[in-house]
Amino acid sequence: MILIKNAKVSWAGSWRRVNILINDEGKIVKLFRSSKANRYLISKVDKIYNAEENLALPGIVDMHVHFREPGYEYKEDFTSGSKAALAGGVTVVADMPNNKPRINSLDAFINKLNAIKNKSYVDFMLYVEISKDVTKLSEFLKHKDFLPAGVKVYMYEREEEQAFLNDVLPKEFVYVIHAEDSELISEDFDCNSYSSFESSRPRTAELRAIKKALEVARKGIRVHITHVSTLEGLLEIDKAKREGLKVTSDVTLHHLFFTKKHGEVLKSILKCFPPLREELDRRALISALKKDLIDCIITDHAPHAPFEKDKDLCRAPAGIASIEYFYPLLFKLFKIANFDDFNILVKAVTEKPARILSIPDRGKIRTGFYADIVIFDKKIRWRALREDAFSKAKLMPWENMRFRGKVVSVFLRGKLVYENESFIERNGMFWNRYL
Ligand code: DOR
Ligand code: ZN
Image (cartoon, rainbow, N blue to C red):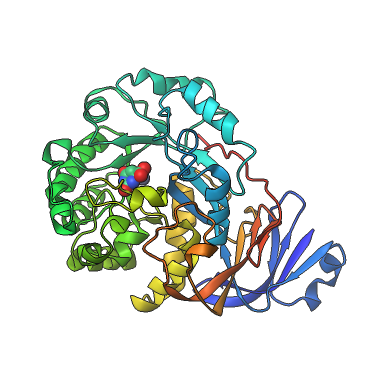
């Protein structure tokens, strides 16, 4: 057994100093205030970790990452991506299927799993992508050891949109929707203007795609709208929730920190789909988090090689890599956007995504849950430097940003796997969804 002592944990609305006892299966068996009262238990402990009154946060469940394996290992691979994840306080990722080959069948899924299974420092789930043959999704239901985290639908791909809107879909999965309507997107824009790029993928494209996806939700399909970027999109989802639809949504870190004005300065480094919008949208996304109208925060960690991002807005690929700064960015957001309690943001990256991904025993520091625990020191001041990055995507908008608060240690299922920028053990495993 391991004991983490002197940790501050959010408990019933306040941050309390507790000791966390973890068994050999990596689960939390007891949380207790005074160590004296539990001499008997402490006598059974093999190892004590002193958290020195730092925060103990649940490991982040990032439900939207692109670790690029197989096919684009030069941009990122499961080892580099998962190292960056640990540094940011992430213990579980759900990885997207836009690989080479695309992961849109059980065979492709199993091949991907075989390729990456010994390479990850964090636990991982994998998405499958919808294709024009939706019967391929039913194959997964016959092999329940290989369940996808969910089904990804790129609405801007015509065939995917058609299959999603018109075919009979298995109801067992959550459908994660990239909501941009292909008919409203154009490839024609000024390669040096972020505003022009943003207009080529207009806010109306998001709204129309969300409306279509909500129609599918009305048929009883579980829909999750990922990376909402506009106020109208938010309102549409909120309306559907009030109607009683079981729809959920998330927002990226970059849409919470940046707008198209920043895009005019950083250009391709901030090129992403959907694009960055107006300050009004950014504020609406933040206040939606405060009011619990958005369920989760994701990175959409989408790394590209520096030589690719070092091009103009027409030629550079879309995508922003953020995972290694996840908890520090969240803590910064808590301070600059005046949230009442850091735990509102913590829940949006832990217990809420765990619920959407059907992982009942992760995402909280509570008895019976896996001990995915991040020790976070609020006092450390540091700066994000390119040469320190574990991700292969070196050109990131967070470069040179100053932070207060850093991930010191990470426990994955009760094992210390990361401490002071060193990786101690690589034992990330495939995590099956519960059906
Ligand atoms: O910006 C993006 N990058 N949006 C996407 O939908 C895909 C992603 C990627 O894979 O690079
Ligand atoms: Zn993505």
